[in-house]
Structure formats: structure tokens, C-alpha cells
Length: 170
Image (cartoon, rainbow, N blue to C red; front, top):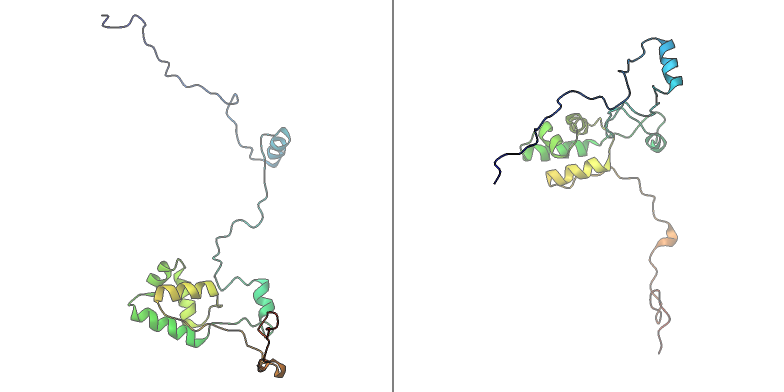
């Protein structure tokens, strides 16, 4: 049985450049940038709507829908005082801080502070998160219901007819 091999093991530890030859230098002048664009070495893209990390629930961002739904010109509906008091009382009963509650519902602490101070624009998703975490039913800001029409009063059912089906056989 042989104890070794006859082939000598050699490894090449030198660096190898597999890409384009020569290192690419970034152009610094406007003339150099134009030349790089024309040669295809530099590509620029315009990204629309990027660069923002604004929360979808922040009170500073006003959407067109919220503006259209506002009843008064230039006035957006704010959280009702009964809702803000209910949130505060439920949070205090659970012995939570605003920050604890905000992290529990995956919102910023400012959002909870705005809801409790009555300065936030009501968002049903945030309110439902608060309800689930606090374990209470919060008063929702409802739309005003139109009064019922006079013709919509319940009429007594006629004998011999079923609701939505064919007439009964006798």
C-alpha cells in the first residue's frame, strides 16, 4: 500500500480579475458623466415616489379621499373625545404606557398620543388594533344615518304568501 501520492499539490493564491479589464473610475465632472452615459458605463434611473418613510397613519399626510369626505371646507374629522377617553382609560387599566401600547399594535408612539389627545384622523384599522389589544369595544366614529323613509315601515304579511317563494297551496 502506498503511503503518499506521486503528484505534487500546488495552489495558486494570486488574485484573478474575471470582470472588465481595469478598474472603473466614477466620473466627477458633468462632461465625464455625459461621456460615461453615452458609452454605456453609467445608467441613471428616476425613482418616483421613493425616499419617503412616512407612516400610512400619520396625521400630516392627507389623502384626496379624506379631503373629499370632509364635511366642512378645510376641516378634517378628528377623533371624538369619548374615543380618546376610552383608549386612555383602557390603557391605564392594563397598566401600559403609550409606548408599550404602540409597540404592541405595531404603530408609532406618536399615533397613540394623537388618538388620546384627540388630534388624530380616525383610522378604522388602528381603532380595531387598539380594541383587540386593550380587550374593549371602543366607540367608533360613525357616519350620520339618514332618517327612515315613511314608506319603509314594516307592513303586515298577507295570508297565503311566503316570503320570497311561490304562493302556498291550499
